[in-house]
Image (cartoon, rainbow, N blue to C red; front, side, top):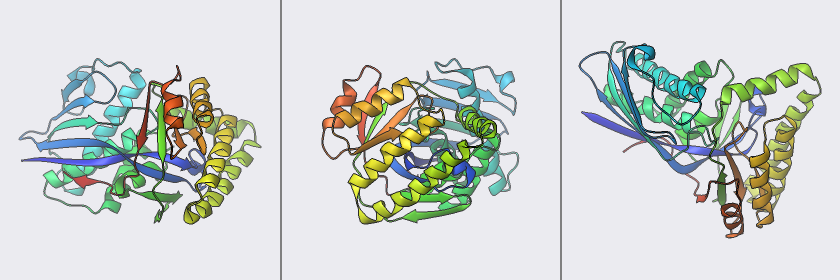
Length: 330
């Protein structure tokens, strides 16, 4: 028997980094999906094959010790690879626990449309889809909220306690969601004209989150920036409810400035943000942990996508529909 589940990636309208400190965030699921196919083995080993995570394909087989199974040959920094494999390991452990099958082994194949470490929720999508597929393969069906909770436990572990529930809840539930601490809800929202620019680089989410924490501890006033992002999110929720895309765009611009102040933007991200704005976007900001990766803009026309495609720092520019459906079996 083989089971395949998929889960969407995400962009943040507002609130990344501040959400770690209990402020609200509003991520949105996008129709870029990670597909995870799981087959139960007769032994307790784990074999992982990655078809496309913006890295050279790799296969690793081991029994709880990746060092014994070899190191994958990939084109991203080792910490990113270690984190990616850590997500898979922890997702498998969650599935085993949910099905009360502690020695179950699996063949796992990951095929993702979401670049690894690009700020588009690749790890959350893989974890959510992986838990869903593996538990189904063991004869257990979890509802989306339990999948989201178990996926959060994975990210919390892999990111050394620095994760929020935002990415995993959004990927599991789909649509537009609001996350504040442990309070997670879905929101009604119109179709949003997302345009995404990707600079081709990867980042370590845990390291960037830890960097903001260190800055906040060194300079007490940085906490005011985090609070300001929370206030901005609450204003953005009202604009979202009204379908006021122009105001959403203005708030995205402000949010990007605040994130820059926290030290998580960068030259390529700023260049793409300004290109999208110059192309006529209602607003643009980095999305995700920062450091590199992706920006998101709101633009119903073609100007922002065209401007991004002509920007040297932008490796790929594309439109992305709002994914109304979260995790699902394929």
